Image 1 (cartoon, helix red, strand yellow):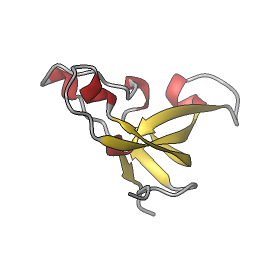
Image 2 (cartoon, one colour):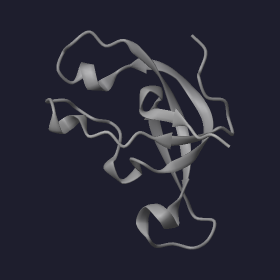
Image 3 (cartoon, one colour):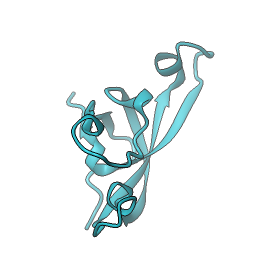
Image 4 (cartoon, helix red, strand yellow):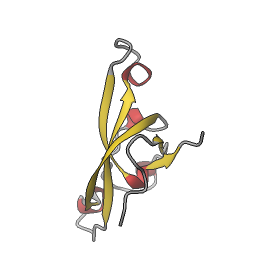
Amino acid sequence: MNPQFAAGARVQVKNNRPETVMRLHLRTPHYVRGRQGIVLRALGRFPNPEDLAFNRPAPEKMLYHVLFEQQPVWNEGEAGDTLLVELFEHWLEPVEG
């Protein structure tokens, strides 16, 4: 299956908090939830760690490098400082416009 997001696509990390509903392992850091970034590249498909952590069948999901401006995330840093995070496709949504 092809990646949903191409390099250069603007995406937003879903601001979900499923850990308050059920026990699971989240690979998506809290500090980027709800934030917008730019896809640098698709890294390939990997078993979903949210399922692997509990020995459940783990369907493969597309993993991406997503680049964020550092200042809005950490409230510090210089203009041009960035943060690179690996995020699975099911945690991303397109930013329109």
